Length: 160
Figure 1 (cartoon, rainbow, N blue to C red):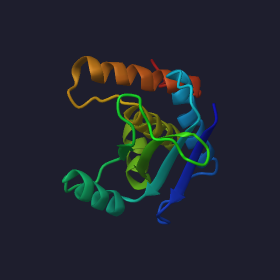
Figure 2 (cartoon, rainbow, N blue to C red; figure 1 turned 90 degrees about the vertical axis):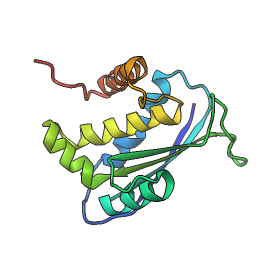
Figure 3 (cartoon, rainbow, N blue to C red; figure 1 turned 120 degrees about the vertical axis):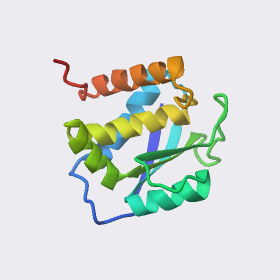
Figure 4 (cartoon, rainbow, N blue to C red; figure 1 turned 90 degrees about the horizontal axis):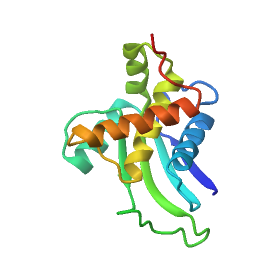
């Protein structure tokens, strides 16, 4: 399985630490491996600030506020369009607010790297069809998968 992650930085106010783009690529790949995704895959990731994600959220979801991450899946029920040039499954788009990620890392007392990886894995699971909106079992399953992938990346939550 080959995974192509196109990363576009659309903001300059909040610089990411060196290695963050590599971490995003690793998080995408680790999620696909964890889910036993067999095809080559392509994902687009945009790194934005709160103002940009607020606008995208309002435009595409009619929610007039910023958020930490947005997922725009291109597939449905495990069926994805293929890139005509490569044959790779086009999974969709991930939009991460670096500004919110920095705040949340402080709030939760962990590294920015862990927060960026968490948001990437969370969004990848959405691209693969998982949802947590209804809470309950779906949300618990998604959280369990997120932590398993983060653990595989060496970014598990420190448990006391």
